[in-house]
Image (cartoon, rainbow, N blue to C red; front, side):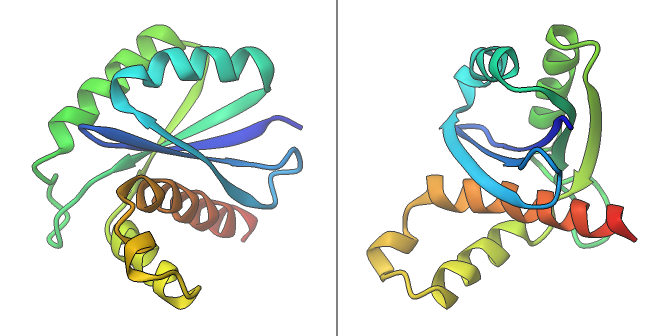
Length: 138
């Protein structure tokens, strides 16, 4: 069974998470510089079968697009131009960074480790993906 991949795209860094082959467990894959995202994905897709890509959709509390929405929209356009056959699903990413930070606290990471923004981006992508998997099962 092909994997599902989640992308937490940001202006500087992009967190990436992926499911196992059975689409049961979401795991953080990596955090990369955003400028290298398309090249990274080309390489990854050549090695792993992926059927769906989730891309975070940043929203404000009132449901309106956030300030970074235009940057991510540009990435989505770029992504679909490079991978027209790939199914893309936009998912609400509100609170994922806060949830990622809280999970770092809960898991006992020291303050210095919690300042690692790349790790927060990777965990955020994992949270988006796990949430999607949970909703998909019901």
